[in-house]
Amino acid sequence: MRSEAARRAILGATARLFALRGYEHLTIEGVAAEAGVGKQTIYRWWPSKGALVAECLLEGLLLPERLGPRDTGDVRSDLIAWLEEIDELIEQPLGATLFRSLVAAAAENVDVARRLYGSLGATSSLTGRLEAAMAAGELRSDTPMQEIGEALTGATVVRALGRVPATPGSSRRLVNAVIGSVSTDA
Image (cartoon, rainbow, N blue to C red; front, side, top):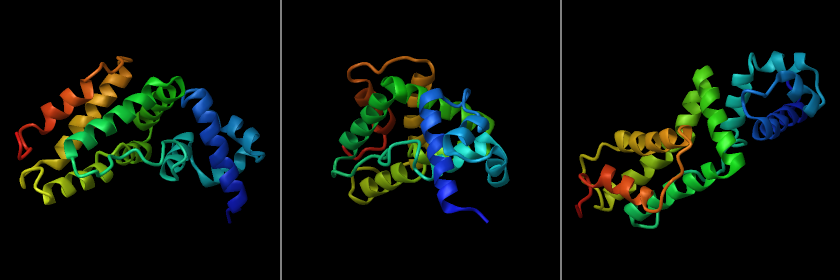
């Protein structure tokens, strides 16, 4: 049976070390030492570091709580502000390392990949925001919400992996390109 205190210590240690070192340099031995537990305890509960990172992601320990778009009643402005928030996170040294490490972890572990996909908003919060915009008449009823989410997050991921900084107005241009044809004001 898991000790909740040990579980929290392990997840906290994983999140701290992940932020400091990135996925590539994260080790179960390092997490065990930081958490004050034996590495066999970690392996008993998580079969790999990818599974451990996935649980940290699921618990909200690796990405800011609010990484989805807000709902101010203006979907275009909300999406632009959301992309700018992600760009700001990625442009910070720690944020860039965290983001690229999460992508590396996702490439290795399907659970991390699914959780990262959801955390970046391509499924849950972004789709919810687009549904609200559709209900409010800002977007057409045939809006391909999943594809819009994938296009917005995909462009952001490609830019982050390429280490290409966002330029002034790039979020606005991206949103206009992606939702221009489904907006009721286009």
